[in-house]
Length: 313
Image (cartoon, rainbow, N blue to C red; front, side, top):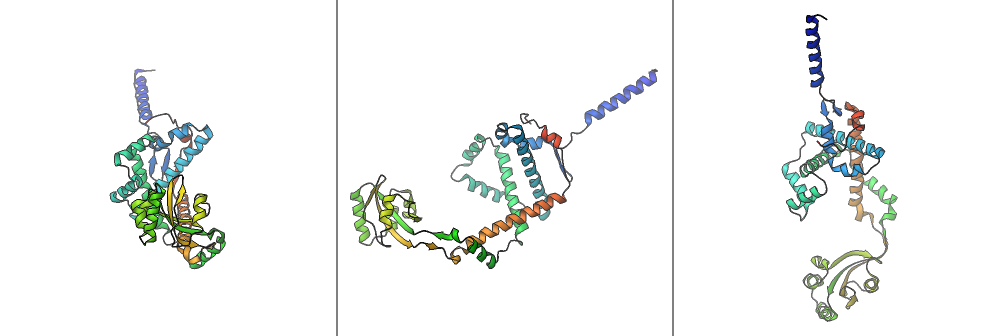
């Protein structure tokens, strides 16, 4: 080989080596022009790592494919939201977070997420995504989910047994420490004082906040000794003191409901909401399936099947 040929050989080798080093990694997933690489998907899997590690290989593979499918759906919904100008405001996100936190402080709730293996920032992002999905789904299905009176009637007749109920009562209680206290309040009630007011002031039971309201119940839902008194009590009358392991009770039956079938007019809105949700779900799933079919999606199955769950990004 001449000196000139040696120079050319090394020049070509250097160019090939540079080309090999600069080659970009292949994406795990391509949705139209959007590329998603393995590190991004691996971060998505972070909350599932403990669960995945306990599964046999075949079930791991299934769960990974489900996670990828969910990622695809979120990406499709994100694009649709942008197309329709739909977004989730910071106020909406904070309201949703506040509802989920309940009585916990922001720090307490974040600590709970960390203890559960969740990254708070990623969890907030997923919550925003869910809120966005709900908005998109509502927009998609709002004109396709009207429920007619005929549909409500048909559903009611087909599910008549679901609306059949046994004998029921609506009642209140006051729970006290001893019979002496119970007798004192019983006399005050007979003299005309308000049961709910006295329950809120004197009862030891948590339902005191609702004036001792026990709600509507059938035989067998309360202790047997309570049923024996309550189902023999005339509505509007106060029972004599009833002893139990919890203390001494006074009861007031407000309403006696005979066994029968709940009238259709009493459950119209309940049925309408049930049918509405079913229609919304069906319309949304149909739309999403069509969108999947119309979108150019390429998945690198080899990368997915060889994913290293223990590797940290």
